[in-house]
Length: 286
Image (cartoon, rainbow, N blue to C red; front, top):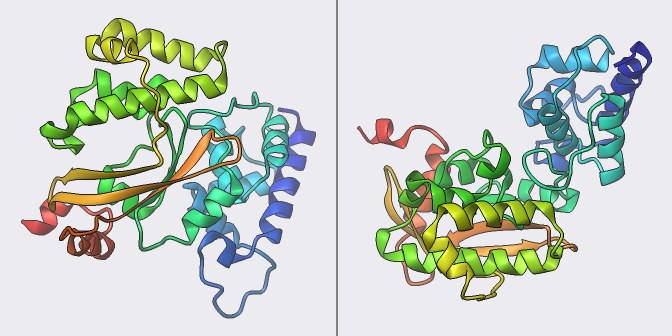
């Protein structure tokens, strides 16, 4: 990256930081704000970076940021798609395709997510790749932020990794498998037959999972819009929730949020999540 781009990158980050109000990203306004917009330490916190690292980026003296860091900064600063692409160009990084960990999260989705501090919520792609989770979603479902490649898709892990299924009671596995495959077929149709991501995912799962191959051959199609499900939490036990979906305009992304299922006694368990958060609940219980 040229020195000129280093400087322009820092200037652009600072200009975007100064236009964002704290309440737009779920932070309290607080007294005695001497700078417009967010503070550097607030952007660093939202992006999962150190304050020193982010400060160096704004000064134009930092190292070339990774694609994952650029994606995190784009989310923290609520950048539009065009602004996200511009940020990647300044950093001399390839503009990411709209899937996987570097995907651009719809700013409206992020805004809604920030307004759900007491409800487990996350944004995923149409291939069930987790883009961003709030604190309670991590506590309920686990942290999915470090997954890359096709493993980022929960559908991929569901059929190829036994560990992924421990989140659901065994009696529910068959229904979940059928639901995942029907939803994936709907996503594949919406993307079109030439989409390389869907083609690669389906090809790998068909070859590696007889269960997936059999279900895919049935040609069932059904978009997941609302689902009542039972989840097994390692410390709180069985939690029954209703999972609601809100779709972006192009249906490539969806905001999921989880509420206690009607008629269940799961409200207390979700309230316990809000108290303890993403701590190691097993240790807390012990």
